[in-house]
Image 1 (cartoon, protein in one colour):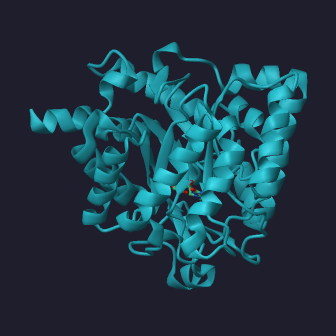
Image 2: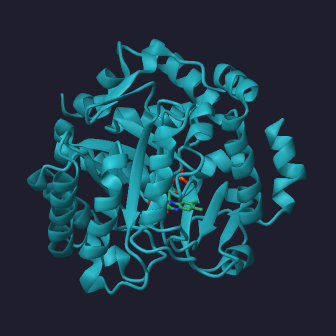
Length: 372
Ligand SMILES: Cc1cc2nc3c(=O)[nH]c(=O)nc-3n(C[C@H](O)[C@H](O)[C@H](O)COP(=O)(O)O)c2cc1C
């Protein structure tokens, strides 16, 4: 049904308008008691075999929603009702900012891809923290793992980036099940320079220290999210740094600035302009980065695989390649509200047909086989 709806309605709408419309429905889902009971049962039935633990957090399955869909943490419960096993909100910046001028989100239909140059449009970490705090007091809310992804305010100079991340950490760490330092979006000038180890080391150390100072009753897991456009040597350098700093996880990957190998005609690609490309064309490179990371860090650091994941088979491939958690965004736009149900059903089948008893047993199995 959704593919037909997409073809007849969403496809003819401006992508950002379609996003706002769908976002409103997802929020509404969680506010109507009958609807949420039905949605939870139909779209998110629990499959006990898929239960997953990552950095000390238990989740009903390995598949979550990647950052960027719910930038201000307003639809967590509705998204959980659609079956996401965790929801990563943000990117949230120290100060509220409008992002880039529209139009800034484009579909490349032939590639099942998106191009975005949103530019971290968000309400800022103070407002997002207030919203998350309100949620903790709400009478009805889903028990779902919430990651908070933080980034740099555009107006803050690169040299002062750490202070901006620290400000957001102080406001948000206590409300986050895990925290992600995003240094990989292509739409904030200079942001990706922070991936260089000499910048990344002090930044991550400052965020770690701020999280520990702010939250004293538990250790908030800290992850870093990297770009697929890093050279292999730089991927290795980030992996080594993550081990050195005792980071909890690496998310691979964000969107790419590459436009290679697209099926979409050149004029449409050109018209979309600059920004990050996501969806199916990203799949091969994201998987390659994940494999490289796993070969380097093994089980010492939790890996999160994201980029071009559409089917249960794609998710399973990431798990075998070393991902404990898998995320997706673009496929949600193309596949609609039954997407997670299909992925979960497929994953349960793939696990049952595999030699592994649990998802955890399958993590990195491909690498172990290759080196056996
Ligand atoms: C419209 C849009 C906005 C995004 N915004 C963010 C963001 O704010 N922070 C972030 O870390 N990633 C952001 N992403 C990247 C996704 O989280 C994800 O890493 C990327 O899209 C690859 O996954 P996919 O191919 O499943 O979409 C965004 C992606 C899209 C399509």
